Length: 475
Image 1 (spheres, rainbow, N blue to C red):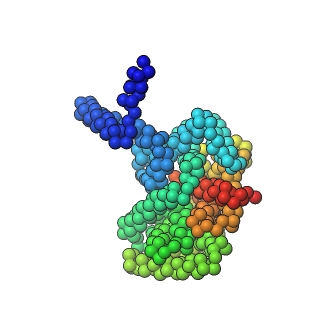
Image 2 (image 1 turned 180 degrees about the vertical axis):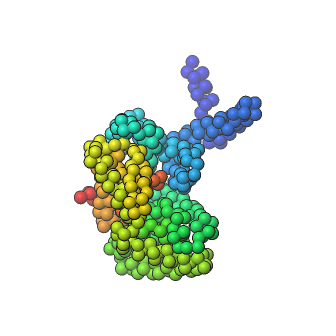
Image 3 (image 1 turned 135 degrees about the horizontal axis):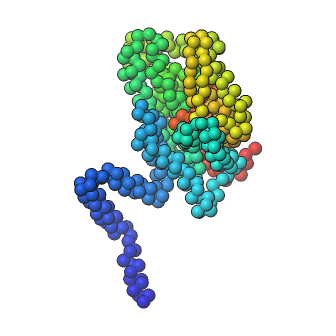
């Protein structure tokens, strides 16, 4: 009897080449079956999508790092919303990132019984996403549509990618792979921005103000790209790498300028100056030299590509910079203040539980006699507090401050030419999101939570490596 059992086991004990042949054979049979059904019943696309989805799930379960690599590589598709609203790409990427993260967290905690929480910030993140579900009942009580609340919850839930990223992306090679793939995403987004600006902004613009309406998105992403590429430029080991990173930095800086977002200009400049505190004397000279080269490249590019429109662009940049000094005289700032007044009323109405995601606020602008209706407040702190109340909003912002302080602590402690730039760039990314959150809702844009989650994961992974090697504790 044992002989027969062993014989049966040996039949299914495939290895190496045999396993590859079996897999290919089964795949061909399955594909043939799908083609036959699609021709006969006309439902091949649905079946193909289902089979490919199942195949991807199996592949990602077997090789979870490739799941994270896929997220990094194709994230530009999700970061760029289409005019048609929620499409198949949004659904696919939402499932890949948000549903994938939630299922992974549940599976690790309740099935594998693994500990994925390492510090108080991790606990706080989990508590927020569990307890904020109760906010749905608040939203429904305030006549907010169910899907409006779900949409906002999904957008802020992209931060949960932090947990699988810090679990798998620990080694130097893994970090290099992830950053390289996100770099490709940023480069694609930058090219898209230049193309939109060239075809839609410049083509029909005559006056300076017309150019400022073309592109104004992904500012925090491009700032993060600037921080990483500049610091890699400073720490590059050979001239070829330095040339590469200076070109990439130039592209990201150029796109950031064309967003005409003053607060991101200011804080990006401020944080680049902040680099000087953490760099050595030689590195400071390299950074300053690189910035001078970037300035020359930017001027040459502006004159070469935009030609006669370059004067208009420079005029607009100057106007935007000067308007920042006008304070409440600036119309856009005046509208923000009116939004904030309405948000304060909502907070006072329900300071502990909020009034729910997706609530519409209305305000009257007396200068032009216009009434505005909006679901989005151009201040993430007001928005979150109004939506979920003080206790839950504090829970979400606490990890940002925690990893900001923790990351800065380890930047000062660590001297490694690979890990230190990543730590510093991650800290600066958190700062830029926190700063941008004062005049825009960074957590409700598509890339907002993802930026924070990846920054947290990089700081966590590198700080754990430092503590393991040097027994340094966080103070």
